[in-house]
Length: 567
Image 1 (cartoon, rainbow, N blue to C red):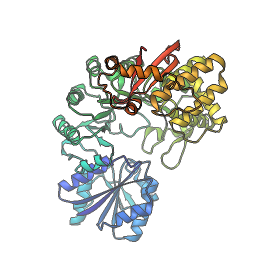
Image 2: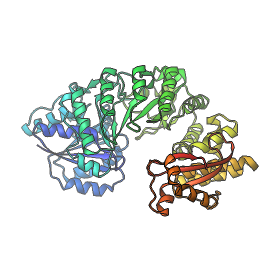
Image 3: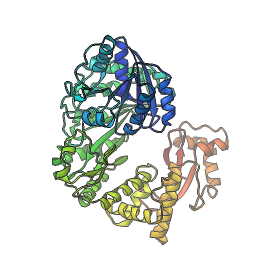
Image 4: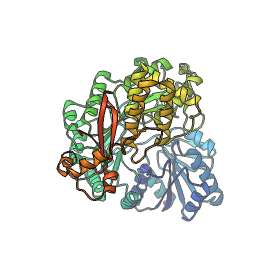
C-alpha cells in the first residue's frame, strides 16, 4: 500500500529518526513509502503543497511537543482536500492520551500507541486487505475511542533496518545524523516518558557496529545517539566506544550518559581517546536531595562530580551538563545551590532547562500535590510551582537567556571567571547581579551575537569597576575576544598588534625559532601569516592575572590552538 510519512522537525539540521525507522521497516515488508521532512519554520501552505503532490491512501505524521500545533493544522487542511484519505498519528505527544487527541483532532483515523515499526506496517497490510485493526492502534468505533491493546514496544531491535538510505543526501545537506543502539530506560524519572516501560532493549552489537561504520565511511561529522542512558551495560557500550576510538575519522559521537555509573576501566579508557571523538551530555537536573527523591532519581553526587571533573581534565571531549528548573521541593534558594554545585564542575556547557509537565508522566498526575502551573499546550512548560512563584520562574528565564549568551557561548570563559572572582560572589549570585543589570540596561530579551555580547560585557566592566581593576578585566575580555572571535578588533579595546609589529616580524623571519612554536610553519606571504597566525600582546595573564608582557599566538591552521610566546 502507498503511504506518505511526514516528519516536521524543529530545525532544518534535524532528521526524523523515529519516522525513518517506521518507513524503512514498512518498505522492507512490501509497502510503498514516501518520506517528507520539513520544519516548524516552513510555511504551512508550502508543506501542504508538498504533501499534496503525493497521492496516497494513508498519510502518517509523527507528533512531538514541538510540532503538534503545526501538524494538526496541516492534517485539518489535508483532510478537507482529501476527505477519503486515512490519517495516522504516532509519536510521544499522542501515544499516551489517545482520548484527548481524538477529541482535539476528530479527523484523525488511527493513533499508534507506542513504538510504531511493526504495528504501522501491520495497519497498512490490514487496510490493504480490509482486515481488522491490529492491536496497539487506537481508533474510533460507533463514536467511542477503542483502546486496542495499549502501548507497545519493539522487543527485537534486530528487525530495524538502517534508517538512512539517503545518507549521502543527509550529509550533503549538513544535517545531524541521529542513531539509537538501545531503546527504553530502567529509571523512572517522574517527568520523563522514556522509563514508562522500564525495559531496555538493545540492537545486536554487530549490527550497531556495521551501522556506525556506514556513517564513518560516508563522512559523517556528527552522530548523536538518542539512547536515554548510553552507558547502562559496560559489556555492551564499551566495545562500541573501543571500536569508534580506533577508526580513522573526524566524526564526533554524542552520548547521553550517567556519569556516576562510569567504571574505573571506562574512565581510564576515555583518558586516551582521540580528541573530539566523543562528547558527553550528563543530565544532573538537581543536587537537592528532597527533589531527587521526589523525581525518582538516585545519583551518587560524590562519584558523579569526581568523574565529570576527571573527564574535563582529559581535555579531549566536550562535556555538557543539564539542570531543570521547576522541579518539586526546589525553591529559588535550593536551585541556586544546585546551580553553584554544577557550575563548579567547570563543564563546557551548562544547559538550564525548564520542567515540561508531559501527558502520561507521573509528574502530570502529581500536579496538584506540587502546585504545578504550566502551559496547557505544548511544550507544557512550567510557569510556577508551590516552591517557585511566577516572578522567580521568570527571573530564571531571564537567567537562561543571559547565561546562554555569555557562559554557554563558549567565547567568554576567562572574563567570566575573572568577574566572578572580583565580585566576591558565588556563581549564582554573580549571574543574578549580571542578569538584573542586563535587563535594566535594555539588553533583554534580545539575542546578541558574540560581538554584541562582548560589547555588553565591556559596558558592564566600565560601569561596575574602575582604575586598575577595570583595566585588568578589560584586558581579560580582550584576550577572550582575540582567541575566540578571529579578525575582530573593536575600537573600545586597546590593541597592540601595530606596536609589536617589528618584534613579530622579526619572530617570523627567524624560521627555526618560529618552528619551535609552530612546527608546520612555512612562510608564504605576510598576509597569510597575519591571517593564520595572529599575535597579540597582553598586559595581564588571563589565568593568573599577573601583570607583565604576554605574547599570545593563535594557530588558526590547528583549530585555533593557543600558544604563549617567549619574545
